[in-house]
Amino acid sequence: MIGRFTAAGVVIASMVGTGVFVALGYQAASIKSTFAILLLWVLGGIYALCGAFCYAELASRMPRSGGEYHFLSRIYHPALGFLAGWATVTVGFAAPTAVAALAFASYMSILTTDLNEQLMAVGMILLCGCMHMGKAEVGRSFQNGFTAIKIVLLVGLVVMFLFLTIDPQPVSLLPGKGDLNMVLTMEFATAFVFVTYSFSGWNAAVYVAGEIRRAKQIVPYALLGGTTLVLALYLLLNYAFLQSIPFAEIEALESKEKIAALAVGKIFSGQGEKISNLLISIGLISTVGALVFISPRISQAIGEDFKPLSFLSRKNKNGIPVTAICAQLFLSILFVLASNLQSILMYVEFTLISFSFLTVFGLFLLRRKCSGSFEGYMAWGFPWTPLLFLLMSGWVLVSVFSRHTLESCVGLLTILAGLALYFLSSRSSIK
Image (cartoon, rainbow, N blue to C red; front, side, top):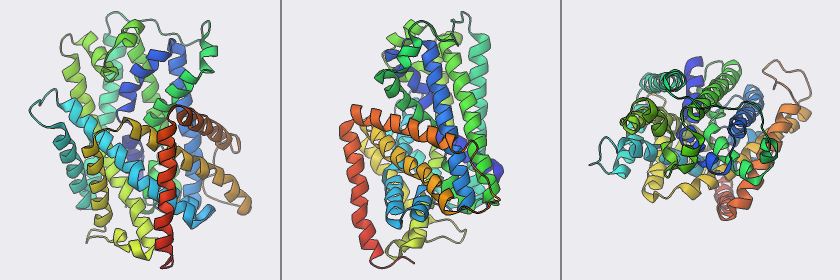
């Protein structure tokens, strides 16, 4: 069974991927204010925490693996839950796994230029899959170890930037002239999408709740503790980036992904790209591992409920859902081979935020239905925190749909395509 540290580590590892290392380059191109950029990350943290408050109560009331699949099935209808599980398994985890693995290969390529990046990405996915298909203790040790390394590396980067930068740049923590008006622009809303992607994973522990001991108590701790730690690290890292690099240099950066390399280069002249790439690639190992670990638990829950898909619930002698893991590895590798993932990311965000919106809204319905006393975790700030989450989610959905209409429509079509599989599966009756 998963304990407190591993559960929180899964949240942290899922959240901290490439997003925080590349978002600033894109944000600075359209937002000319250090205050507004830092505000983006504060709002992203508030968004994630509000969602974590709500999911923590839902997990405390319904402690089973599956995440939105389980919640929406219980609150609304099994069909809606199945659609959420279908979208989450097929794209919601497979695509981000491929993105993280390809990012690992890209960052490592500067050190091993003779290796094919796609093969490196596939190799990383298979390695993480093998680690999580053996004994549970081995997978937990692998995951915990690389998550701890990631946290140490992030803290080390922040300390290095804050205290070793020779010519620190001024960073305004208070709004200047025109800064508040910038917050109301579509550019600010679009930049916020990058932030929500960087914070995605704040709900990771609910997907494996069935394997967490004392889930009613530990899942809320993992969601809130992991999200709070990541928020603090993100704010410190972006403040350190802005202090280390002149704003004009960030705007002029041709490759937006090289923010970290530019910052490290200010301290280690000539070696910035190699050092930063090595540190980021090491940190990405735990991200790929966490995603490979989490997603099969959703497939497993679906297989337990639908007879035609029962093969997904098969476990080996160690209690590991090997068939579901193999299916997830196959899907992730397909996305790696597709390789063109920029538009997929917007598609993923629109799809997953839609289901998160419905899940948090479902908390209102659940409280109304279960009006009696409840001894588990209750969402802090209810009803204001879920209302704020719904407002911010709606803001992101409108922004993504208006700027990436094609990807959003493809996301909706994919969700509807899951209906066919649901009706085929449900005709054999739900167990």
